Length: 361
Ligand code: ATP
Image (tube, rainbow, N blue to C red; front, side, top):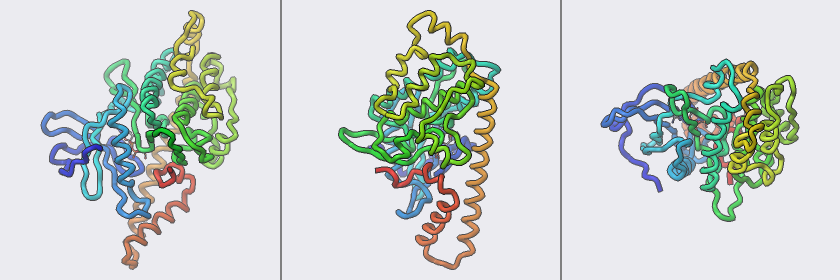
């Protein structure tokens, strides 16, 4: 079991700028006082009342910590330390300062498949290691695929956010309905027993987007997206895939496979000719094919816009909830928190899927 240090994190680290925000808190740059080294501090509000949806359960943080400690790999973010106060847990993580892979790619004028594959390889190597340790990430999406730094010309992939990750134990049946609709596997929506294959579906979706700038199952609403995933109907529209190689499409097809047992594993992906060409012709094909940069840039701009919109939505929601609670005469904090949660859920039902709730068993 990881040690959650009871000391005040600020005695050891200076707290700096906000690097990002999640559902349960912020990630900030922190500077170790003794060494001057920069790290990322993930500040997680801990749920105080069992029925509340405010904050994260301590047991979930314990799971995230245990998993991060056990999956040490160059393509997976490293955990250094954990601090705990009455209301908060702070994870001290390796600082991943290169931003998101998708943003890095969107800044380029063009990108050959062979160049994109170098990144895919690293993602798959991280996953092969993780899956080999019986851990599934369950939240693979562009926001959680980052780059080590901004200075080197070949930055390393770092997979982050193990908040939904799960370690499988022998003979265990695990179900969860958490995830992000665009990237979620059909078996998650159907509440079927899960395996590491669910991550491979997400890799199929991410590769599809990377090549075309289209999201294969995206609907007008989350509900529609989920229906599209369940139908597993997608195509390689020539208008968007004309520059892609047939090997790339084959790679995607073998991942967007409805039956998890028939989906390629990370190990198998690393041996697929798109990733590891056997013949000269295969290798040459990857250098002749490129990603649809024009549409990819559009996709990424829309994605970033949606992310900032969601953030504003979340902030407004918090302000409104605070104002609401202030105006109340009801003295029962338990009831108050549960009511706020109910209201929150009613107003955005699809967000249920994105939460770390007691929806896993
Ligand atoms: P979510 O609700 O999306 O699951 P979360 O609360 O689990 O989020 P993370 O996804 O781990 O939090 O982090 C939120 C954001 O903070 C990330 O999208 C990223 O921008 C930034 N971030 C997270 N970890 C690091 C890190 N180690 N170095 C730099 N930035 C980071």
